[in-house]
Amino acid sequence: MTAQTFRLPDLGEGLTEAELVQWLVAEGDVVEVDQGIAEVETAKSMVEVPSPYAGRVATLHATAGTTLAVGEPLITVEPLTPADTYRAEEKAGSGNVLIGYGTSAAPAAARRRRPRSTPGTPVAAHPSAPAHSAAPAHPDAGARPAPRVTSPLVRNLARANGIDLASIEATGRGGVIVRADVERAVAASAPARTSAPRAGERRTPLSGFRKAATAALSRSRAEIPEATVWVDVDATRLWQLRESNPGGPGLLAYLARFTVAALREYPVLNARFDAERQEIIEFDHIDLGIAVQGERGLVVPAVLGAESMTTARLGDEIRRLTATARAGRTSARELSAGTFTLNNYGGFGVDGSAAIINHPQVAILGFGRILDRPWVVGGELCVRKITQMSFVFDHRVCDGGVAAGFMRGVADAIEDPASAIARL
Image 1: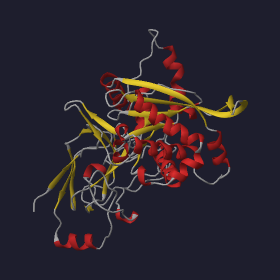
Image 2: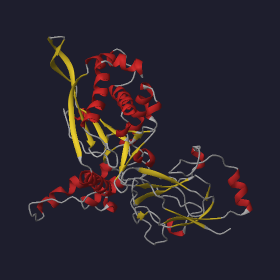
Image 3: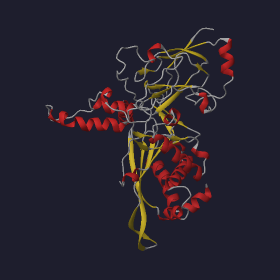
Image 4: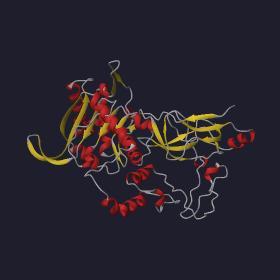
């Protein structure tokens, strides 16, 4: 059996490249199918790439910090000798799954990571690492080692501010340069940079994430003839329901449940539009996208199979997705699977928004902040909890009547949640 080369796989959602953040294996290591071999950062999230092959690592085709295009060589694995096979079979489990690779979760011990050093301690070379990973045989024993940076965000921050990473003192665990180290260096260099000649402008290069977002948003506005409708909704009863059960689902979980119910009634909004064939593609499942603002920007991970979930389950999934999205750890499948988007921009203290549809979806529903406002109930003026609900839809897939029916379905459930839940 000959050596096999694994190339950077398609990471989904039209992404064509990724930056290699760090290797999880070294040349000479024995790897199993599905074992994590590298961490890469796409324009959307950090992803751990598992190996589709078992064997001994022959070649690592790139160094940390390199940007690779989909299809470029990542790693070459050679077949094991009988002795290697015996040792490998003593291990059990498999690594995380990425777009069709692998089947099950792995025990932590199954992964081979290079040891991290403590500050001030040289990094010991892996016994099977390539020669270039060992300390250089140089007469100057006090030469400073190469800076250790595991976060691409930190590298980008240093690059954008003209900071040489080799000049920074690392304070992170294991001698890693962290964001605070770069920020201190930026602050220290501020006087020098301020005194440099200026032309009255400052230019900031777009990050890979922002480039991808720009392309998607521009495509949405260029291709989709969108229309926006909105309505003020009395959320008093929903607010009271949530307050009566402090340990229960949050408001967003209820909004998600009512949205899913309305999508079942109006499935044309849980769809995509095939412009080439002039067809509307409806889905029999609802993967509900939840807009999340993280450090790297706005992402929309999806609650997979939302149509089969209870309100409590939706709440648990929304909390999990929010946490992983803010940490940049959402899976590629969750980022690309959404069939409809729910946006809670009220969390930013705003009342309304004419949002941009998350292409290639056909609609997006948003909620503003909930405020005490004067409202007429039964002919009497009183104070109620009011929120503005806005809905943006692709006019190619439906007209205003369908959009209004969908919105009323959600609004009526919010205004009488107990009855709505009893019918679900």
